[in-house]
Length: 448
Image (cartoon, rainbow, N blue to C red; front, side, top):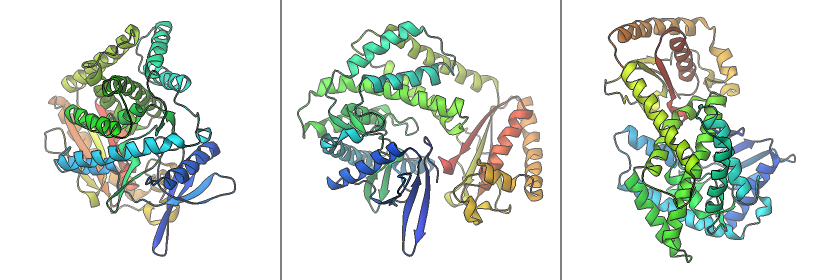
């Protein structure tokens, strides 16, 4: 089992009538924070995974298995079936916000000396996030800026963000992939980065998660619901809370852009690159409607440049070229949904190919990992299959380019959408990029 944004590794361990999740992480301090928070939050009735056992070196531990259903997967399935943020989904998010209030208030009494990497989301922590944005997004996207002017605006923004109640438990990565649904109950995972901070940050993390893509009207409804819920428990100035909330929305968007830049442009992970346009759309929706009561002219100029450059790039892709979307998927979960309006394209069935998933040593890997690549690459059956697929797809791309078509989809399916389909999709995307002048997008549906 993977961990999208970290170096932790997970396995599902199955025994007689029971299972648990085994975790491996060489960062002992991070493990200690997770283990402590799990115990402390459970004592206060918060639904988080129980830790069953910890190794002597503190690098491995066993925790409660909460299944595979996340809040994001529920939303994804609804969208794939033509739905989205219906009343049922809004109700589920309101349950989450009820729980968030409990988590933030229950965590006020925690021992934050156990926090990792820092006890408070203070000026230093915010500066780290802003530097992440500067060096891994602005630099890697070649966004122009004046470093001195940007730093001056950073300091103004930091002072403003800290001018609110920063005494809550701040979960830090409170987003839909870290919220599980098991037996009708919501559970919360991946809180090892928690620390003391402002309550607004976690609400921003949830409602402005790029891939969740919550409509603005529903974001506003959910924000008002949360503020009323919190104000029923503690005394807050609702207008001041909301004003600072949008400051935390912006810092969260910038932090996410830095993460997407690092994982996408630097580490070459496609999933994170795909999230960047959604994050920029979130940025645009905020800066067009909200004007913070502070003077940060250079930073505002940088935000406008990002939005303008992305709009120009998107228009160019739509109007002047062919985009080939290459998908991997599991047949158990249905065919990929075509969003181009053209009704779909090629679908290749990989289930007759040799299956690494039948062997225990490959089960924790995907078709992007070297052990699986070594297993499949060079096998005569696999190579014949790919050569035939390339011949068919190549003929279509040539004709599509001649006729100035704008989209083509190519999908590879296997049993679980983990090994063979991912490997074939990667190979096809690379082959297209090397042989044709077109834009290639790759989407590993089940791995997201």
